[in-house]
Image 1 (spheres, rainbow, N blue to C red):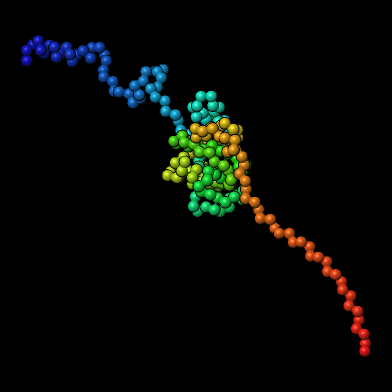
Image 2: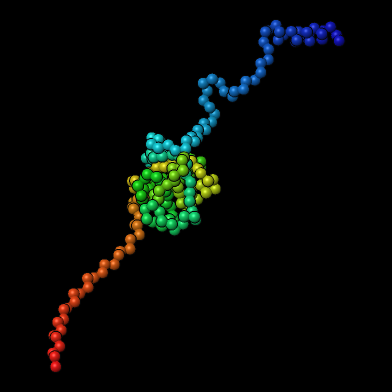
Length: 212
């Protein structure tokens, strides 16, 4: 090897040692400068089993709409054909095709907007039964209501409940009408027949037979 080439290679090899710097391994963290804003913000998912009185609110993004307050958040389940046409806690017959639900404490006929925390879909239901009584679950939806938010294919899903008690509040992208807030008419109980008092019998006096 020519002397000039040897001197050049020696200088190149000695350069890092002379400067005192060595190659450092790449860090395990993200290459984001300190204080810089993240490039994407992914909302955190809360997996609490059941939380009441959260104080949070939901906003469907429609300008001018008032955000709904979350009444409760937790797991939702559903029930269908095995309970179809059985009596519910308020005396109705359960209809798995109706938009109804079971809740442990809300008064009967309360309208509740159930929002899926998985896909954001919503459904308006009416409370007509009691339950569920399994820890971690806050509401039992009918089969039709569960289908509306994609619950039947997932079993148990995390939801947020908002009580709908005023006309114009929105659920599922639509304003709730006044007739939707009216209580459902319960089936009339069969009235027992009242027997009319029997007429008083007249007392007939039979004269004694005459002896012959």
